[in-house]
Length: 269
Image 1 (cartoon, helix red, strand yellow):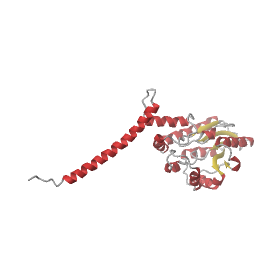
Image 2 (cartoon, one colour):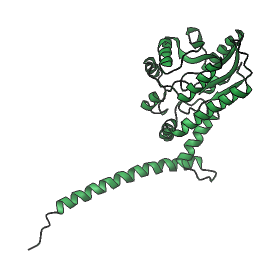
Image 3 (cartoon, helix red, strand yellow):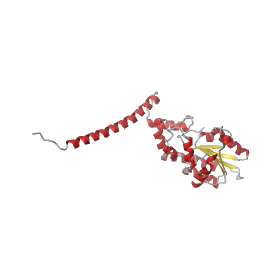
Image 4 (cartoon, one colour):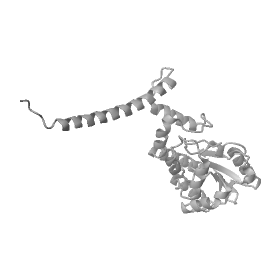
């Protein structure tokens, strides 16, 4: 009479479960490999061996160098990489370096007159206040911007301070430099913006310039260039600008020096 192993159904279930797990791991690795392969096919035609990480880092770097412009979304294959970067120590170190160089310039190259006309311009979003919490919930740049959704988030006034920028902000205040905030935010967000800034430690600025109805037809760079013209016409000497978008620092008239913070999540022109 044959011996029946009572453990057989249990063993089969364990084997089925193990096979399922292995298949899931295989599919995940296959998906990652496929993404790598696609990048290698498209970007490795000159024989250079690159990985997905190499490709995404190069894309990010060329956004910062202003070689890549006018993009609506981060490439699908790089969304995860950009999210990791914007929440990483490297992002903080890169930003701290921009602030360090700003303070070195302020300390060594600015012959401040201390007559009330020395000025420095700051952008707000991702310069003083971080929108990373919003983008974290909305695909880290992988989705086309929904401006209504973003402004609704801004209206709540919960954007956290970028501590490295607060350091420069306070250094300028201590030296008697007038701080001018020039933002592409619209006027109906003024109250929420002021409350958010003050609650996060940014107070004591001289002016907050936002986009009004008359600015609706201007692009962001044009709006900010016009703002600088008005400030200079009032006698201000603009020693520096700090922003995270090229539209904040390009255009005429400019400042004596401009400094850019890293931000590969979106492009504002």
